[in-house]
Image (cartoon, rainbow, N blue to C red; front, side):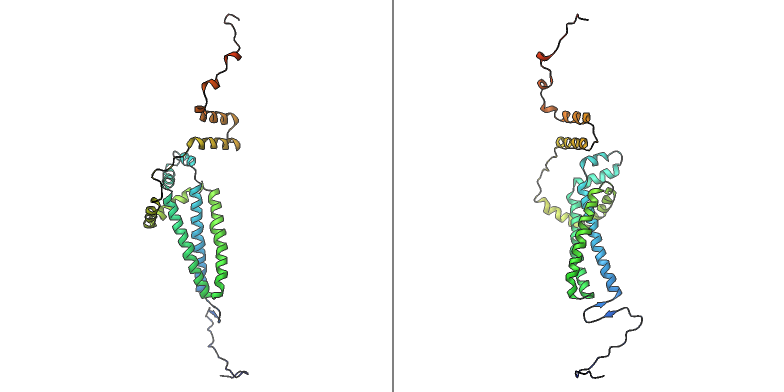
Length: 246
């Protein structure tokens, strides 16, 4: 051992073999395996959350009129999506359970792995980066895709929900018991007449219905509010012609 100028001693560390892939210092220990694990954790967390947000947006974007239109051309898909919408609390519970577990457990595991690889001082930066990733790639982007392309994603939704509802059945049942305590016994009925009127107006605005079709449907819906005297022409404004005039 050689003494330093300050009177201390310089330590000699054993040489690292050529095959070693470890870079070590006082602040962090970096290995290929630890970095691979960190990347896997990030991809899994963001990927699972992305899928959950995509399914949630798709499920909530499906309209009753579109479901009804699937009955004849696609009866299998019609039955599956009708079942999901009829008991919408079950698929929503499955989505939220998986999404919450992925975000919570994923963030904890990523934080621990970052601390082990880079040091405790990098955990704050990792949390900030994960917040941006989850907000953009796991919330805004998938929900925009689901709300825009929900018709094309119904098959994927039904397939994923069949797996999730089976795997998470005990947890879903538990949350069903809790939600039943606050749910009304009779669900409120949809006002179909108002929905048809709104769809008719939307179709006319988007040039899917012409003016005559729009007025026919609108007048048909309002027929109960119109009295016969409002439709008949008053006798004092009628023009009559004698029957013997040719």
